[in-house]
Amino acid sequence: MQLSTSKIEALKEQLATPQSIVILSHTNPDGDAIGSSLAWAEILRKQGHQVTCIVPNRYPYYLEFMPNISDIVVFKNDDKGVAKEALRRADIIFCLDFHLLSRLEQLGDIIDDNQHAKRILIDHHLDPSEDFDLMISYSEASSTCYLVALIIEKMFGIEHISRTMAENLFVGMMTDTGNFAFSSVTPDVFRVVSHLAETGISIPDIHTNVYNSFSEGRARLFGYVINRKMKIFHNGTVAHMSLTEEEMRRFWFQQGDSEGFVNYPLTIKKMKISAMFTEHSDFIRVSLRSRGNIDVNLFAQRYFNGGGHKNAAGGKSFMSMEETLAHYEKCIKEYAAEGML
Ligand code: 5GP
Ligand code: MN
Image (cartoon, rainbow, N blue to C red; front, top):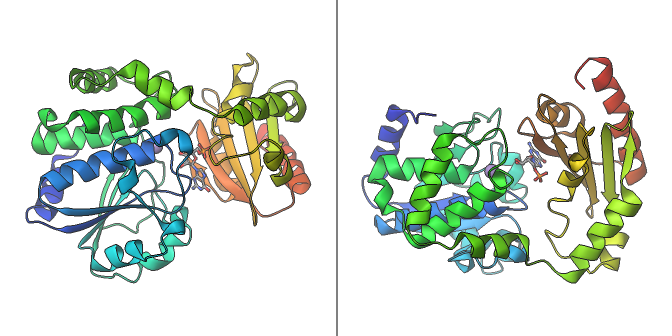
């Protein structure tokens, strides 16, 4: 993967003098969203820019160890209006790790208050919208953190990646690639990782912090979901699981606790598609994963107002849980009838 030289030149031009910058990432921010935002913020601050990182809602508790994460403004809890003021003042708004302004939910409504700021996208999702003045968008990139590392390398030199930046970037590179196991992983990803490792980060510590720092409730919830809520159909090749708000309360649910559950059915050899449906106050969140050539990005776009990547996508349903599950099963039949499964 080669970054476009003209885009990097355009980016350099935008950043030639100190700017007031906002970095935004998506709702339900994950390791890649947070890691890319924090690393990008750190290098920009070092270049003399003023930077505010904003996410629409809270990040999961197990990411709290990430360096400088407390600098991130959580729009939902922002009683003092810090986010609104930073957005109003911004010369540049960077949008990291998402491709549609709708993924900002209510935060999206206030970015229109600022019509003079340049909007710059740095992302790796398929089919980005046209709402940006500059788009650094590579769907073949395995994570936004990897992209940010390449941009830093090309603009300033890889030696400008500090240990804290490396730690943040490593989190996103690791989580978005399923521990460097997905088909999006290239030799160059490991080249970048080797530079990150050179800064002295502790890979075992990061791994433990991300994957072995959950609550007891999460472990019990996982057992419950797999044992009681996983339905397998379509000749053993399709699975779905669901969680209602009542079930989440029963297991002392904290945001992020069901992250990753959707991958588990794909540990079954025959499995092709897995879906997880989680109930929220006014919609059901849909999370989809697939194996190989099966395209859940298209499936999410068509049937669940969503999108993402070929093998990992998401969306929303505004029906009841029962209707949503029935809709999913019907859509699977239709998809299979078209030869897409
Ligand atoms: P996850 O299942 O981990 O929440 O999301 C998987 C992928 O699907 C992510 O890359 C995410 O950006 C994308 N995605 C999740 N929810 C939505 C959604 O509501 N709309 C769109 N367009 N993409 C989504
Ligand atoms: Mn990502």
